[in-house]
Image (cartoon, rainbow, N blue to C red):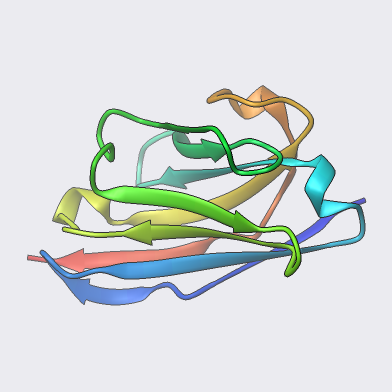
Length: 122
């Protein structure tokens, strides 16, 4: 089993930056592909970003490309999502996910965090 705990969410203004973190425990973190998803009210959970085992490869949804950066620190068992130039449409609950496949499908990930709210006011 893997436990994932997100932190760092909150309320910011449009144009601001925010970094959310996800701490993992329970299994070798360096053997897990990591991803971020988000779910806005009334919508399905959607892919945001993914990162490979050593961080050498990343993949982003078109809506966040150029504004968000995913990274990981295997020594700290933590994955990060740096969000810049935030927009009101980025408002959502952000979920950290871990799995054994790299990609943008929810089915690639076996473990999920509880989610953290990010609200961007305009």
